Length: 492
Image (cartoon, rainbow, N blue to C red; front, side, top):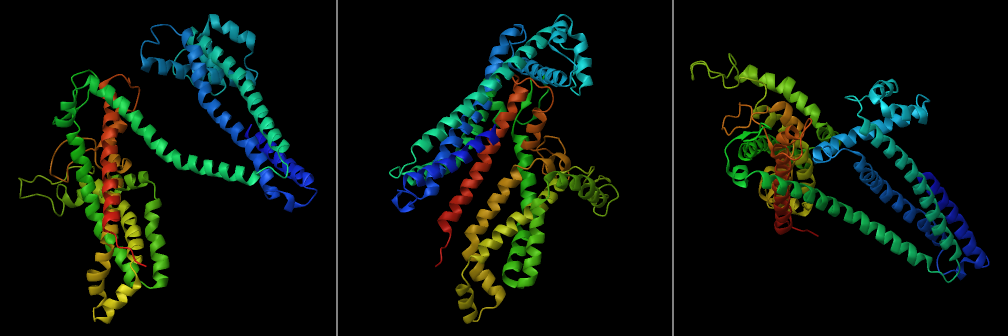
């Protein structure tokens, strides 16, 4: 469909341009706009409305089909939103399996009608065409899947006709309007402006959608669970059987503890690396060292998590564990400071390594933005390079550096995979960095993993945690932007 619409747009471009030139007698100076603008107007009229309708249709069609299929399901299935979602997933898988089986000649309409009376063999039939089902197919699931398949095919045909017709009509209107007095350039510029505004609005609308989706589920959670226990409780113990302790404080403590250790690692190393690269390193060394340092930012976080679990954690156990070089033997009756590879220190160290390029790259750009005239003036007054860095460059770049550190902190707070593999899964409030703890992001993953009921507080708490984490990171970003804008120094 996309290729057909694009072909119509290209043909419309060519025909509109030719018509404009023909109406002008071959003299482009007679035209209000350049000939290409008439062609672009036809391409816009053909492509943008048709593609927009197609996207909206693709988003709306599954919902319309689901609303048409729901009356075929038993009442006991549609009572719970979670159960309905699971059954509709089965319906979608069976419908896809039927399409595959029909396309491969395994089933036909008569065979499907025969299966409606006894669908027990359908599971094996679909398994033969590569569609795996977790359980036997219920008769109502087969009936709903067959209805969904027919509706989907019908709406696909209607969508194709509507989209192609809209593209042809749009191209025809633009071609018919291509005469010397038509203000094609104005139309194209307004269309491009609308496209730019739409692109700029997408980020805002996406953020708003994320916040609202979490907010509504958070409201549902607080209608089932007291907010006092969530914000003021002291333990985290979900059991999915009621009477759960769902306090955010142990998770928030673990999140902040690991983030602080990560920043204690990343900020000094990253800042010193930025100072060296910008003030002391030669051009050749800088062109090699900076890209190599920024490679750390491109490593997937799951790789950092494996590095924490398999390398850093065992190394810390060898140093601080039982019999280690710095164990607590003799201090606490032979107890070890660290009993396992998963600990706050493990995740904090590895996360700090991950954050080094964030701090160094941003700080390097900020330091390089300080005018060279300030350095020359400092040198002219007799200051050494180190004194110039301490007393001139860093004070001038400090607001930007603080902003970079706060942005790195928000990145640390939202990290998941390193914490999952390196910090453990125990929710506790403790000051020992060699104990296993967990964070907000880890618990969000845990509460939404598996076959969960989205009507229980033990699942809905993930949205409350996510909204709290969003507010926390948003606050850090706002503080960072405020510091940068209020205290930055602008130079000519």
